[in-house]
Length: 117
Length: 113
Image (cartoon, rainbow over the protein chains, first blue to last red):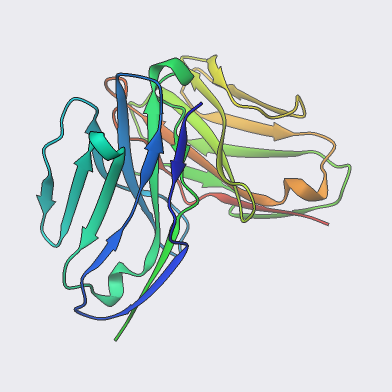
């Protein structure tokens, strides 16, 4: 079965600190997709990034960067120079064909990030 | 482009009642899926509809059902409500190819008393 583990449940940092959110996944599929979503207090999940299992290139988008390592089944997310607006719950998610299609995302438990001024 | 719209935002129901939640996807999106979010279980997949057909279903009892209309709008129904059904129910729509990102609405917060 597919599983996503976000070991950290809550992190509190001071503005401008760098923070890394860990994500470890389990799947037997050879083709799968990994996602990160952000959930601000308003409730909706905001898509941040998608990565497929064949693309191990790391990605940087502004202050955000992602490190995908198939060898350790990890897809970690780093926020550089954190800001108060980054405060939210962050979810890592996995989707793969054998578990029912692209709509069925398996989510981690989420990690609440609080950035203090 | 308007985002995914869910109504109502908040609902309070009594145990044993039934409830219907509504979701309007992003214009042009034909796939709509539903997720339940609770503090204990986290985010769990309920079901997914595409062109009025249920294409995928999660591990929820038959009290949870849904449908999709020809305009892609979707409704989710929960019958014989239990206290444990209290949750944030999130709807998401998707357009384009498989595995393209889901776009979520703000959710409906259901409280069962």
